[in-house]
Image (cartoon, rainbow, N blue to C red; front, side, top):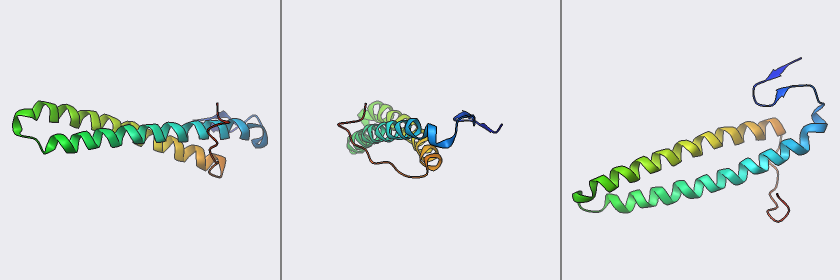
Length: 100
């Protein structure tokens, strides 16, 4: 029985797990989009603060740390999403009104 570090053992046939895998992939896609928006906002804030005078250096340091944290979260989610899409075999379409 093959072991898969993300999805456990390969007991169920591939066809039976596709709806669940597709659901997880869609959830990962939506989470990625959310993390991307957060990282973009933090980058924009960092960019604005970098233009200010040096007395705000503590704010710049905090903004830099916040952006770094958001970028790491985004990168981890991107790796997870790529793995899920590869496992699924296609990129599913998102229908936000029917996704729960």
